[in-house]
Structure formats: C-alpha cells, structure tokens
Length: 225
Image (cartoon, rainbow, N blue to C red):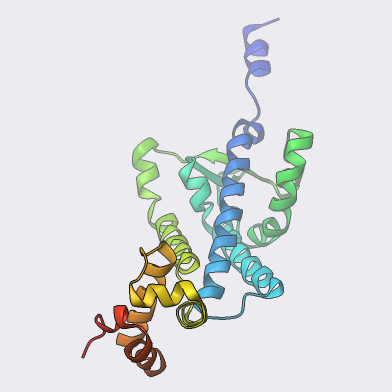
C-alpha cells in the first residue's frame, strides 16, 4: 500500500471533518433562537401562549438560518471557529439557509443515529474552519456579535418581570406587600419587581406611579418628583 493511499484513508473527508463541532453549533444556535423568540414575546408584553411562543421562536430560527445562509456564519458556528460553505468555498446562499431552517433540527437527531449529515450533503453544504486563524476569526466577529447582543437582550427580557407580572406580584400577593413595605429581606423577585416598577413610573406610567405612591413606600422614595 503506497503512502498516498494510506494518507487518503486516514484523512476524513471535508464533510465529516467538522461535523461534530457543527452539531454543537447548531444546537447552540437553535437554543439561542428559542431564547430570542421567547424574549421578544416578553419584551412586547404579549401573553405567552404556547402557540405564540412557538411562532416567535420559529421566526427567530428562520431569520438566523437565513443570515447563516447568506454569510456562512452564526453565533454558534463562530464560537466554535466554523463557517458553513459549499464545495467551492462560497456561502450557502439564502435558499440553502431557508431549507436548512427545516433540515438542521432534524439533522441534530440524524447525526446521532447515522454519524453523518445526509441532509447537509443533499444541500451541498458542509462546515469548514474560519480561515486566517485568530485574525480571521476576529475579522468575522461583527455579525455574530450583533446577534449575541440580541440574545443578551432576550435573556434580560426573560428574567425581568413584565408589567403585568410586576403589578400582580406587588399588589396582589403577601410577599409583594412585604416587599413594598420592607418588612422582610428582599428577594431577587422583589428587587426585580421594584426596579421594573420604578422604571415604569419614572417613564410616565401614571397607573404604576400612583400605585407606588399609595401602596409601595419602599419604591415611592425612588420615584422622580
């Protein structure tokens, strides 16, 4: 057996070389899109029904997949030093990105079972390392960074009480009454609700402002005159 034959047998094909890292990247991106969709619903102060959450998460995933098709990059891929490309080295394109929005979640399961990515192969795309080492990785950072900022904003919306949640907690629960009157040690929920109430009151929400002045002395001291 020649050295060339031995070398070719030991070297995995391009499509398989980074498939495990791409699996992790897809899982990260899918999770991030779900968080962005959830955060968008909460930021809009909509009632979080399963149908609305599913729709918002789906829209976020499709948008992320389209951006990944146009540029080859997503936050998950970039974090792992990968980009998605066709055999000739160019970005997959919008059409492949849209199709991959449907196939990538299925491929997460198929890869575990089959140990390869048949749907990506059908689309003619594969993962490759971002060229240029650390400098190349840094040059490709701006777009994933914008998406990460959106993700951070979504997480903030998720952990911050909505207006309805804040009023229900402070006005209709015993722990909220103690929170408003400072008779117990403040919990995270108490601090988050008070901060949200004060922001609303200082932002011109007259209903919240009136409630704080009349029923919540702890927060009333933080309202602008």
